[in-house]
Length: 258
Image (cartoon, rainbow, N blue to C red; front, side, top):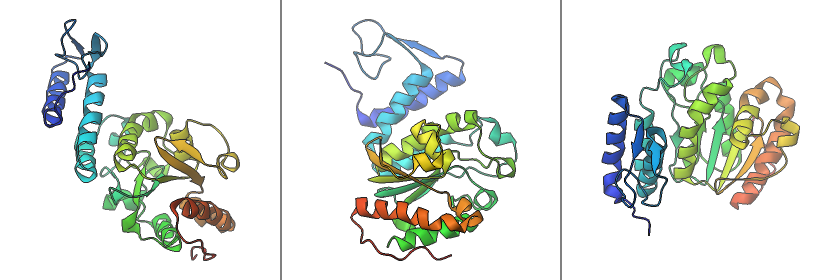
């Protein structure tokens, strides 16, 4: 039978693995028939520190309540230097904001200048439009959770590059696993393609539901795009009405104000 480590010991064990990594120790081995050095006695004979740490982090966050778990993920992220964005002008990490037990989660691509300044996602002009979209659904910003694929502002608000998304997205996936939203709305093609691992057009990505990590996922236009092309607001509102139906919210004809 698998021998699981007591939940209260997981944080300290994760800290120990980080310590060994800082010393340059990256591989761990256990003796056959022993649970030492492994979270599960039936796990493979050896494991890298990265794999073991990921396993410990996942089990730790599951054992905590959502607010504590999100705080732990933020601590694990630290003053992140994992990709080049940390040395390309970012002022601070923009982690995420909202209800840790939200039924609805919005995911964008990355922080802009206002977000980088304030440390909170979607607070600029696009964020103001997103607030109106949320209010038109009959909700408040405080009731949902908002995050991005990457946590640092790309220089000049350029599109996040593939390696930046791949480095940062595990933290987003951990946020999703903790919050367990009923519905995720991917805002724009960058968020949609990275979450779904699909390379397709927005017209093909929209208008359907996806099963994603225990949640339903819908794709719609990014608020910044809607500011550039207001003609697409009606289409985005159709997407949100499907989300409202899935959440059991009253369907109204009131579209977000311009």
